Structures are given as C-alpha cells and as structure tokens.
Image (cartoon, rainbow, N blue to C red; front, side, top):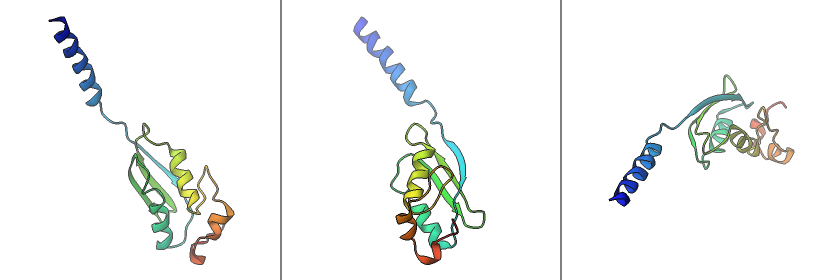
Amino acid sequence: MQGIRYMLAVSVVFFSFQLAPIEIIKDSFSVKGNCLMCKTTIENSVKSLKGISSFKWNPTKQLVKVKFDPEVITLEEIQKAVASSGYDTPIFKATDADYDNLHHCCQYDR
C-alpha cells in the first residue's frame, strides 16, 4: 500500500512540473540590412535553432523581434546565429568573411 502512495505522490509531482507554464521571453535587437533578400537571410539564420517561437526582421525599422524559451536558447545564441550569416548584432559582429559573402546589395554600411 505504501508503494502505491509513493508512486501516486511521485506522479503528482511529475505531472505538476509538466503542467507548469513555459516562460516565453519577448525581446528585440537591431540588425542592419538593405533589402528583402536581407530579410530572408536574417530570418533563415535562426530556422534550425530550437526554442524560438517567433522571429521577424523589420527592414524599415532595422529591428528583429523575437520570442523564445530561455530554458532552451539564449538571446546571445540567437544573435550569434544572425552574426554568422553576415549581419552585425548588438552583441556580435559578423566576421569579415561572413560579411563579404553577402550579396553586394546586402552589404550594409558597417
């Protein structure tokens, strides 16, 4: 009988953790770009990353708006992925090689 009570208690604790709300963080950061090709490249730079529920770059405002799960990914990891596609972020500067690989119309003023 005690074994059943123990299993029941463990189950209740386990399921209470499963039902806990997921914390989603909304944030934004600046990314320079010139055109819709930039938009595609910037947005595709994070497609393979887990934990991002929304990621949009606004070409007019030069701003990324992102929603992500901080238990899965950090803002630094997201910005690093963007920088590796050739676009500077507030935290990471794209390497010259990544920047030079951008199409000529996408090479923004640094």
